[in-house]
Length: 120
Image 1: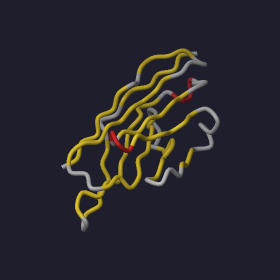
Image 2: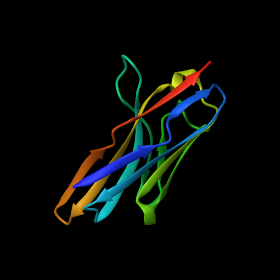
Image 3: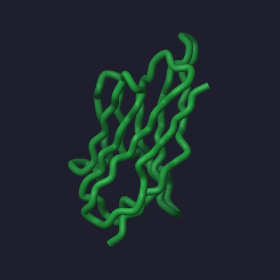
Image 4: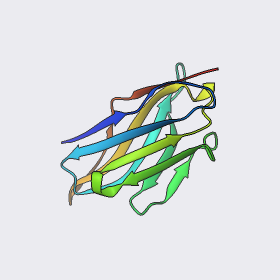
């Protein structure tokens, strides 16, 4: 069993910054990829950023040059540094991880979500 615990959401004014963290624990042989998704009211969940085990990153066009994803492999933790926040960044942010728990088993896991609200 694997658990993802998120932290760092909150309320911030436009132009401000927040840092999200997501720590994975449990039966972890290898973390293949970790990422952040978000879902605004009435919208579909969308990928914000992801980072592979080798360090390759991928960003949504809407957050490029403002958000930075990073990971600490020793702590099984992924971070999302969000700068120059805009009201349209307001959403529930979810951590996602693709984790190999056994040689024959790789699964996707989700965190509980953390609210990010950006006021104008």
